[in-house]
Image (cartoon, rainbow, N blue to C red; front, top):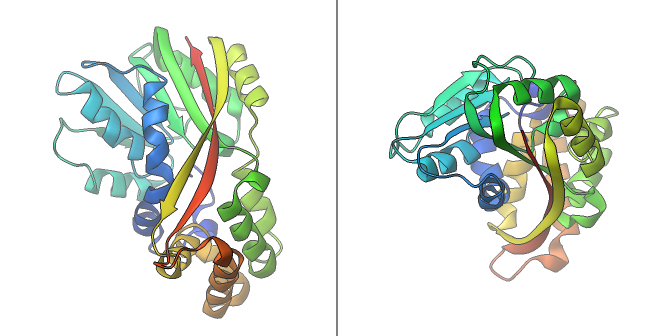
Length: 272
């Protein structure tokens, strides 16, 4: 989840670094579907919008190759720092820039494709963000975004939501709900208004095997919501919240401590 202010509410002090580590098992498996949707080829120019720590940008660089160009933009300076540090260095440099989605520092019609993984639900003004995205996309260029499907179909996130309701304080449920707030209809309507056509959407469900939960759950919870939970109840609240998540997933946890759980995104595509 990127481009989601206020960052200090969501994450502990080491947030962007820990976000990159603990979000990777959930975010990276969907990157291939996202990039396939824009049909990248060697030499393409690509923007990873609300790029976070660069999961999609790093993968796009491998597809576009040395003749391509990949940029990543995110409003969070910490996320951009980590994206630059974790650049694989196997490809030409990726241009990571601190910028909001509705004010991009790029010339008009420069990208063959724009992708956005789990960012559009956090844009304060979706219409303004998509108008700016349309501006920097070339005619016939492709756009694709993923957002989480409703939370009630995702056992891992349901467990997180209950922990936040219990230990996150009065503001926690509202912040959590934002990650699941965008619908396919909202996104396609905003894309059409911005000048895109050929909009389409479909759901993608993957069974993802998470690392041993005893270590993974506390780290992921702290990376996303550590600041909010500790503000409400201190470090002991964060420990208790993690235990509650683990207890809810106990019947899905294998003997080795891992858990294979369904995660579902809505993939929305359009053409400029």
